[in-house]
Image (cartoon, rainbow, N blue to C red; front, top):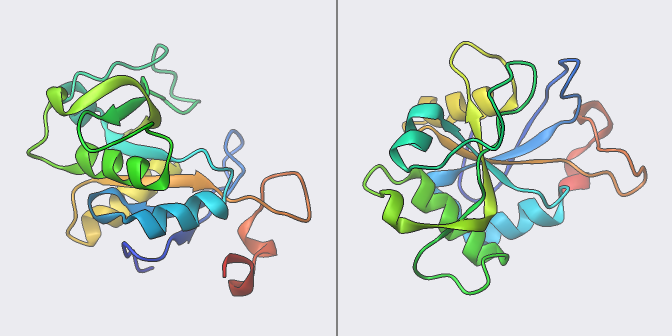
Length: 169
């Protein structure tokens, strides 16, 4: 599987809690255009998967106590500089790059925002973990943008076996 900044990579998951499939982009190099594509072809709810240590270093707290059976979402953030409202593809891509930047610290973010971090737990096999691992294997920081795939023909979230390449064009 190839991960690039310019075209989202489909990623499936079949655990009992998360049955939807996702589009994934490397957070370190996500562009405005690729974020817009991801938003348009997904639920629009783009998260950034990060390791817990990274969230701690950025002083971004979890929303709830860590439950190993559910996604561990953190407080939403925006980049502190270079964004307008925070909701545009440009603003969300910039925030994702800040989250992935090893040189960024907590002062580079404001809370609340429009990008929701989610913890990638070591040893787990969910979508956040797989997305972060794809980034690592590509030589990028362990941070990935992900969003659940939407299916225009069915109000339920889409699953990869029902998708074809033309569904994402």
